[in-house]
Length: 118
Image 1 (cartoon, rainbow, N blue to C red):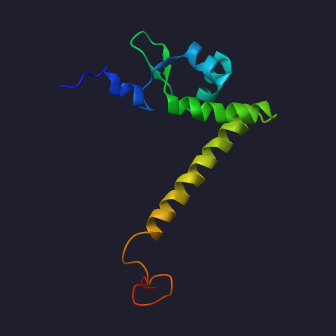
Image 2: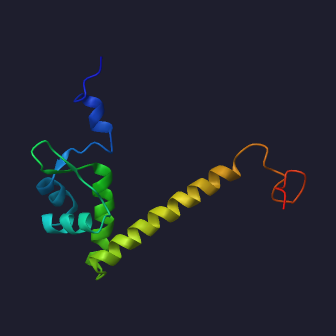
Image 3: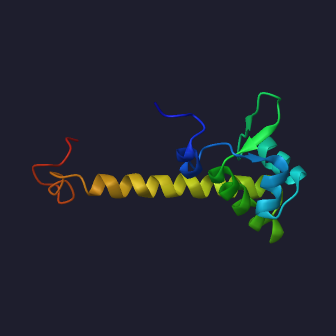
């Protein structure tokens, strides 16, 4: 049986391992910045049993991207929106590439037999 607190959690980018103070320190920000990006719905930290915010490595990477934009003079709300849009674009490009690689779709681009009906 695997423990829910075992070493595999160290490799889990989504495991909420970091307290607010430690998370802020790791990305070179303040706890107030982390609260602001949470309020802007860029990230949604999990809460410990005691109600304290806990952040994952993935969330810290997202918050650090927003912090970089803020450091360049972008308002927090705008920085959060930019990061969200960048992620949506990246996901759309990933899906598009995956669809292009699906077997049996060679004829669709030329309008041949594999083309979708009009």
